[in-house]
Length: 411
Image 1: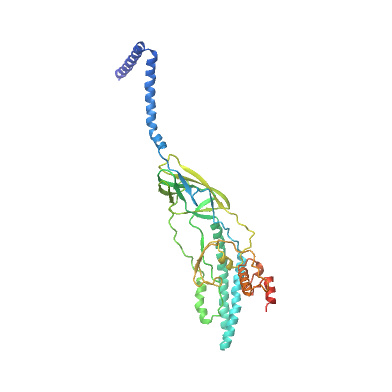
Image 2: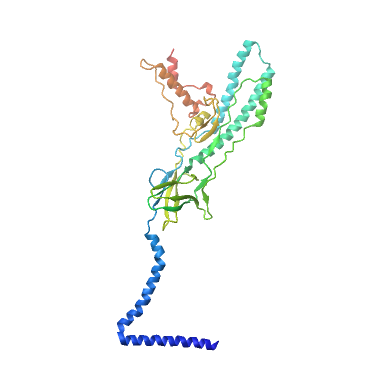
């Protein structure tokens, strides 16, 4: 072992001596400057060659044509600001709505009872007092059940409208103005005040207001199961599986796919953003692709308008159903609506009028038809429940002072 080590040292010493002799002879034969140029130039050239070889792929990547990606939402400009569902929910007065609807229900007891009494009296078939009492007791149970169901529905309606106002379903698009981009992926960086929701809230139809019809004892037996069943179970609507996922780092992402030059590609599905409070919320985003040397990044502001609490609240169900703040599914025909078939009410696109229309005064140039139209519009406005002065049964609504003056002078 010792001899092997000694032999190795002898070889190194011999090699160094040979190199030294070669350098000395070169110095004598060619001069100092030429030899030093060779000694320094050869290793330096070798080192530069190694560096160029190592950097060639990176240089090639940076010098080849690059994609130019932009994130779009509306229009052709990169996204800068996104507003939630812009119309703030219109306030409702739940206690007034319940009281007015219950009053209208009980008013039908008087009106329908009076009509039935006159009709039966004409036929000489007046029901017994016991039958009338059973019918009234049954109707009162229905009214009490309706009161509780309506109050629960209004609580759910207020919660859902607040969530919808702070939400926005967005379908992102990616535009490429450069070279082909392969396997593009969109990544969202959400602040703590913004979350991903399953969908934009909606609600099933409200409970129908009971109307007294003076049922007989046989009708009472047929109606009792309806009281025992209570409200129908809400319909379960299956949700479409979203193409958006969340990685362990808390980022929300989706795959866009390949985007060719001058092409716009939509995300597979939209995403519902929901803020926890009004105001501006900054959302960061990144577009990743194998074809680019660097990641395209940016941000946009998710804005939720502030709700104006000074607006007059709806005090009747007609106001909610005329100007709903979210989709109300399968609203049936009822005293609130004149349609014969159940329909899905869509969210309103305008605010209700804050003041009733003016009824023109009687005069030679005022047509009766115009006065009747304005009077009908005034009654419709009163039915919204914006003015607490008109609370109570809708059958005893009183028109405004201008209309009262007109009706007193008309013959």
